[in-house]
Amino acid sequence: MEQEQKIINLAKTGDSAAFSVLVNTYSALVFTFAYRILRNREDAEEAAQDTFVKAWKYLAGYKGDSKFSTWLCSIARNTSLTKLENKKHSFPFEEFNKIELVEVEDNADEKSVFLKKAILQLNSEEAQLITLFYHSEQSILEIAKIMNIEPGNVKVKLHRARLKLKEITALLINKKSVL
Amino acid sequence: MITDEYLLDYMDGLLTDRQRVELEEIMFNDIQLKCRYEALLFLNRELGNLGLEKPGPDFEKNVMKKVNRKVSFKTHLLTYLQIVGPFLFFVFIFTFIEIKEDSLFSLVQIFSAKALSFLRFGVNGLFILGSFLIAIYFQTREWVKVW
Image 1 (spheres, each protein chain N blue to C red):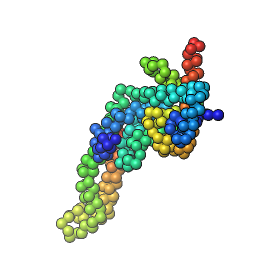
Image 2 (image 1 turned 30 degrees about the vertical axis):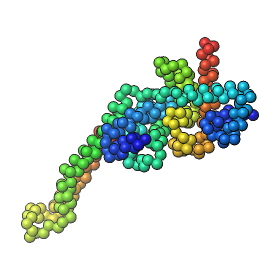
Image 3 (image 1 turned 135 degrees about the vertical axis):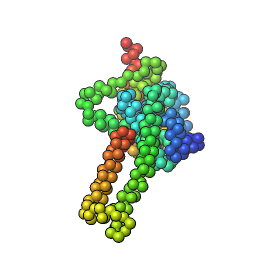
Image 4 (image 1 turned 180 degrees about the horizontal axis):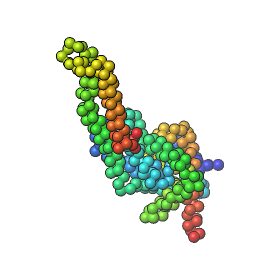
């Protein structure tokens, strides 16, 4: 944590090499978060890149009163939602739904494949909550800050998302065993 | 009736000590409830172990390219200001300081007062237009994604 703060301070002075360490550390998290919103690898990669460029631009505004990952996820969320909004406008609805049918890598183990597929069946908000809670290790309060909702609401929605995931995973496993 | 939500609260450590002990006692005697809890615990563990999606191999390189472009834009801007700064200063002086006929400058003898003021406006206009075009050039070349 202290080490990270030093790197952030260096990056704030304009040291792009220090910033590249932060990019390396958080690229997978930011990309996963964007992917769970946009459901398309290409768009998610673009949104994740834009997130880091914005982070670099506004790094001076990061005061350290929240975790760096919390701050970064807020930028990623806004960037991805704007991109999603633009996409909804530029694609007819049917086309947009087709894009959401994404593939999960074949080399992942079966349990991960089922879970990743199940997460993609959740709505965008639920998928974001799961990503923030499990991958980014954000507290309920931090998630509430990123998602702009009440902490109580985060808890309820997170419960709902996990129960939904349990059902979807069971369905996917049953479907596979029938086949 | 113990709900799944209550079990999730227990799993997340959100129950009070008393609620926790009570639930553990109930679970000890209720196999079905214990199974429900185990299923949720399994899901929780799997979600925790789920790897992150990885971006393309050039991701970091592409981000840093964009970031360095921004640095380079700042450098360009500084260089630009260093070059045009003194010029801007003289244009400013030339525009706002009155040149008297008996001064060292003989410009007034060459140009009439009207022609001189037209020239001042022309130089300033060209300077502003030039700066604007250069700024647009930088913006489209370097900062189109950032702005």
